[in-house]
Length: 390
Ligand code: AMP
Image (cartoon, rainbow, N blue to C red; front, side, top):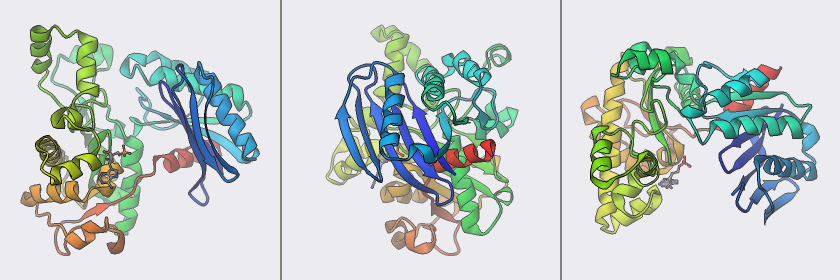
């Protein structure tokens, strides 16, 4: 089945046409700067496009995707649409899109203010421009809904959980679920027989403890700000730091929000960049800020891995994924050296080729298994969509 995967953000619409049989992406693209000065860039079997156009709302963006797919002669081959949704609130699995689902996604806007309204609008636009296609919503939080209460509760009055559903939700669930299935295949086991630590490391990063194929704990929380140090996000903080900065510098809520979401993490620590490639290069040339950022990122990551490992009886594999996890030899090597207490030892040659010549494994034979698995969230969204509409 061919599935149009849509990822509607606050000012962008990303799309891909995935063939679930071949698992290939046939066409993909991005409309960005919605509301400002729209720009579309897309590729397909019949050619590429790249231009600016008038795009005041998501409707014009989805219309442009529809027009491109028609020009590519792909439109009649698509049988369903799968939407990536950041926050699923109460949903524990993917859902067919209905008015009830759209209304619920809008109702939890406070949980992810930039994303949820855009997702709901994206579903309405898709209904308008692709009226005959069934749609499915795939939630980043759903995979984490198996966490036990002791893992998802925060140490604040219980009434905030009861009244306002304040709890750990976890994100990147589609990626953690995808690499769990892949890592199990690599080990020749069923996911339900496996315990993993999955480390999705990209611009946003999170680690999960996978117990018998299900999520037992994860580092992202009520929002994707919690846990690991990220590109521009701080990760976990002593909340009193925010009180201190607010009192001393007069920062209001919006300014604090910008500080911890956009100005912190690798960018804030290094004073240079949020990009791991730039930082690795700069660190090797002696840039102190880059060295501090890299060292702190890897240490905090190790500390979180050590923490959530306590949710498991054993670790069958430590799995690296995401742009950094799949490509950064330096990060993987440093983290595995930091994890010596758990017995991890890296095989430098395997690490150097990202595990490609050793069936993904990057640890030395006879030591605990660590591997690199490329994530593919779009494929999983397409497969979930197919499963629900069939
Ligand atoms: P993602 O959000 O998964 O696309 O990951 C983006 C992050 O992956 C950025 O920090 C990139 O610098 C990093 N990344 C991509 N390729 C490499 C590479 N070859 N070496 C180190 N980091 C990389």
